[in-house]
Amino acid sequence: MNDVVAPPPATAAAYKSDYKPIWCPGCGDYTVLNAVARAFAQLALPPHEIAVVSGIGCSSRIPAYTSCYGFHGVHGRSLAAGTGLKVARPELTVLGASGDGDGYSIGGNHFLHACRRNVDLTYVVMDNHVYGMTKGQASPTTEPDWDNKLSPGGTGIRAFHPLVIALASGANFVARAFSGDQSGTADIIAKAIRHPGFSFVEILSPCVTFRPEQRDWKNHVHPASVEATDDPARAARRIMTDDGFNIGVLYQGNRTPYPLKMGSGQATVESLEAEFTP
Amino acid sequence: MSPERTRPATLSEVMAQALAIERDAAERYSALADVMEVHNNREVTELFRKMASIEARHMQQIMSSMGWGRPEDAPPVTGWWPGGDAPESVPQDEIHYLMTPWHALQLALGAEQRAEAFFAALATNAPTEAVRKAALEMRDEEREHVALIRNWLAKVPRPDEDWAVDPDPPRYLD
Image 1 (cartoon, chains in turn purple, orange):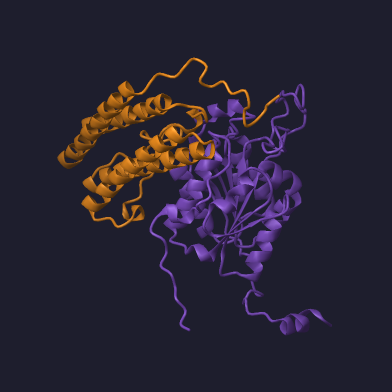
Image 2 (spheres, one colour):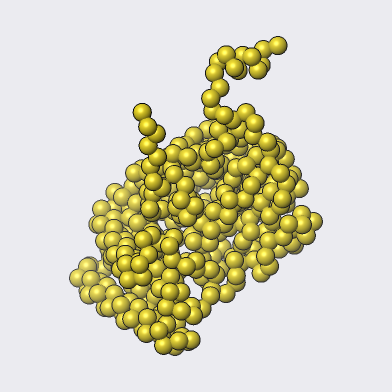
């Protein structure tokens, strides 16, 4: 039988499934979903050559809302699953998705080592500084003085700085986006996918239910005033000293991605036995 | 990403910017319709779907007038909308699952008015006659939409004061 190659879909809507997202009205994740779909359309990627891999949490519902292959994985393990998938099937475009709890706490260790390994995949974290699905606990990016019923007076714990940590750990592309800026977010995700190696996109995505004050983020975000640098020290200095609302591609490195030698996709039980059995 | 939104200098650029605005609006209305459908708010779902189809039709009109097969064929539009949202997009954080058609139309009215003001300003500052003419056409279209929505608004009842009261909310915050 001849291989039939479907043409890439014409519109971003074709990358969305028929399932209606179950997020709170006003949640920033709706526009992240639209931005992801637009980025895929911009790159004219066939949906069957894309895998969206997530962990657990509100944002991690996203694979079901796309028409691509998807894997709604174990809590904090979107990068573990995504890395394995990309190594086994390097021809796929792999997009990892998490929230700040899933990605930086439960999956924090995977985050560090995914940056180090520099496998050619894109990691999108929808950061709202709170565990939304489990009703509003402080997450690693929560401000230390965020006062709420579950942590009266705030946790007093210093907030995790994902962009700097990604940079220090070896991520090859580091960007910050804002969910309210749908077209800008789509452009950043498209650039992240195009860039070789591990690309990290932190998306500020307000939780209007447990952090209603984040509605005000739209009045604070602003585009980065300078172009991305390929100098990690300069990027670190910029990121450490910005106001946290600086939007754009902040670092584009040139590390060689992790070599993907295994992924012919044609392995047989016999060939795997020969490889792994002494 | 440049801090300033590029001021269109050619007809192609102004139409690309108009397309970007209509596209954002169509996708936003569609997403809002999905939200309302999940919450079984059928009247507002229908209204947002209708708005999405109107905006999508405008997208198609712009693309066919310019010979663009898909939005990605248009020249890239770079820059930044203040707050992220394009002028004709309804702010997604201003919706409520119990909102009525009156609320939805108020949001739509605001969006159309912002779009009208945007194209009016574009026409005033247009660098060429072709850009000015196109911007004025867009402004007039948006002005028609403002009038249309005002007519719709006159036909829908104002909501009761307790429209947002729900004795059994989908999410308890206490």
